[in-house]
Image 1 (cartoon, rainbow, N blue to C red):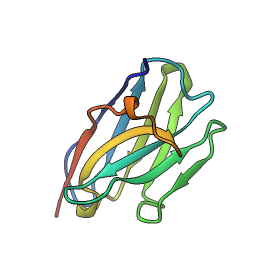
Image 2: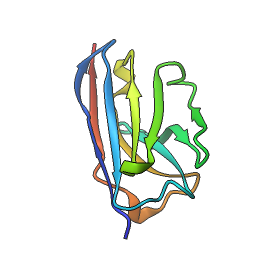
Image 3: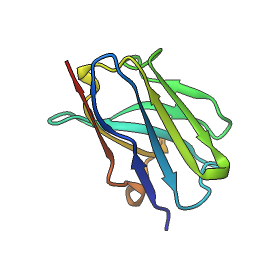
Image 4: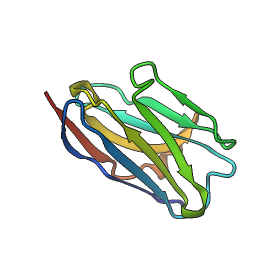
Length: 116
C-alpha cells in the first residue's frame, strides 16, 4: 500500500520561504500526476500545484509565480518550493494524486503557518 509522508512545514514570516517534501513509499510518479493540496481551518481543501507524469506543472492562480512544484523520481519525492509567503497561505499541506485523489494515500500533512 502506498504511503505518502509530507514534511518541511513550519512557522515563517510573511515574505519568507519554505520547501515542502512528499516522499512516496514506492514509485508512483511514472503513471500519476501528483499535486499539493492545502486545507485551512474552516475552508475546503484546494489543489494548489500539479506536476504531470510528463513533468509539466500547473498552478492555482492564488500561488502562480510564488510556488514551484518539482519531483525527484529517483527519490520518489515531490517538492513544493514556496516563496513570498502570505498569511493566507497558512494551511495544512498534503500531496496526493491528481485529478482523482486516492483516499488511502492521504498522509498526515505538514502545517504551514505564515505570520503577518
